[in-house]
Length: 74
Image 1: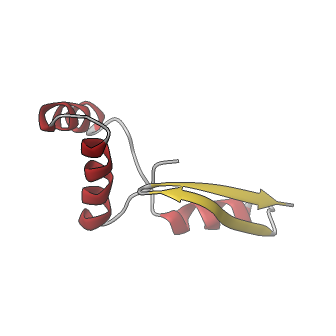
Image 2: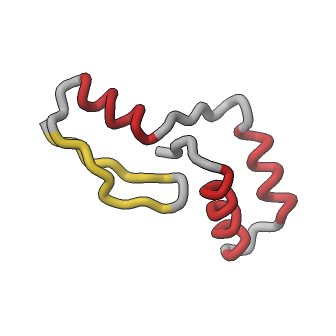
């Protein structure tokens, strides 16, 4: 899930896109396409929601820039 994060974290994400061959124009176009459509939440929000619905253990098992993977157990 894409989470909200600091400007520095987003810059690291954009740098990864550049290393993978995306142009500045492509990066900016994608950012504009998602603006107001993709609603991100802070990582803690996901922990809180999962715990509130009954998961006893929630942890990050992988993370790539602004995309952490969570594992939750009941």
